[in-house]
Image 1 (tube, rainbow, N blue to C red):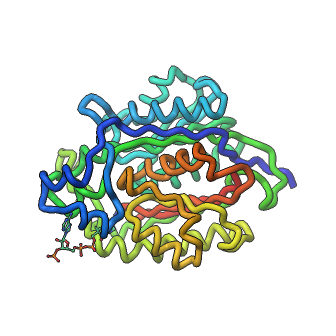
Image 2 (image 1 turned 45 degrees about the horizontal axis):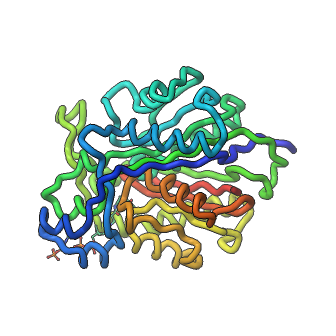
Image 3 (image 1 turned 90 degrees about the vertical axis):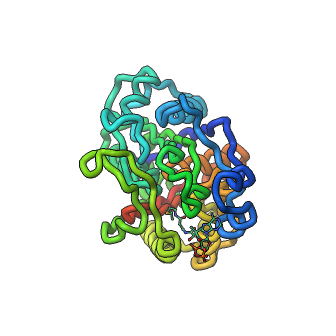
Amino acid sequence: MGVIRSVVSGTGSYLPERILTNKELEKKVDTSDEWIVERTGIKQRHIASETEVTSDLAVKAAIKALESANLAATDIDLIVVATSTADQTFPSTATTVQFKLGNTNGAAFDVQAVCSGFVYALTVADNFIKAGQSKHALVIGAETFSRILDWEDRTTCVLFGDGAGAVVLSAHNGAGNNNDRGILASRIHSDGTYNDLLYVDGGVSSTGTIGFLRMKGKEVFRHAVVKLAGVIGEVLEDSNMTSENIDWIVPHQANKRILDGTARKLQIDPEKVIVTVDKHANTSAASIPLALDEAVRDGRITKGQVVILEAMGGGFTWGACLLRW
Ligand code: ACO
């Protein structure tokens, strides 16, 4: 039976110019390049300039994604921005992106699921496309996490960076089997029990302040590998596939040890895991589309391959998408 599939028709990304190395961080807090590399794999991160806001990063990534899809901004009928670092409390960053792109078609809104934001946003957009409510959706992950870091807390400030990535999802007709191109399965989960393991200690209706990111890293780590391996298993099962069918995993880039641990648990060759955490650190909702764009542009990900995107973040939230490129 014929079905509508959401096919990625373009990718793009943007990183702020300023690079902050581990060596520079040694001068700010009591840390060392050696500790950061050994525990996380991170060597550097990009930091937005004082005048750059999240929507600026998002727009730059979006323009590149539109170019690679060969589409104009006015062809887009849905914009979903995944972010936890919005320009303003309201309106949404997505409507600002829409305005900056010169688009007034359709709808634009934000999705907030922290590091899982991009998987959530992609799942939402996929459902709009499958329901026939969108033909070309722009899905963006964009963050300025440097603005919510406590630069005196060495346990968190060394882990994050700023950036943006985007994809265009376009409606295509499929046969309804797992040979179709496009998103074949997606699963998203949340469990608010774990709020206190990873959160920001401020908010509009609580403290009236922006707050800083707080994390119990060891406990987050413990949950990450189990939950990520579990949700990857779910999308494989939904698609009638096994880990042997996977060509590439594009994980949320939090920590090299989480990436290695998840690959090991699923018995997937580490060579099939796209890694950018060394250069970008954790850019939350932006990390998957940033890594995806790199692997598409350097020719690793090619048409017809099976790609899994997976993430876990504050909430906890977690999820995975399986797609045939
Ligand atoms: N530099 C030097 N020493 C440090 C630093 C630092 N930047 N940060 C912590 N330490 C010290 C600690 O104070 C501690 O010292 P102590 O033993 O004297 O008390 C020691 O290093 C060990 O600290 P741990 O927290 O036990 O170190 P761990 O091996 O767990 O690594 C880390 C910490 C990297 C945060 C790890 O737990 C982790 O990656 N967790 C996952 C968290 C994550 O990635 N979250 C992102 C969002 S969720 C997601 O995306 C999956």
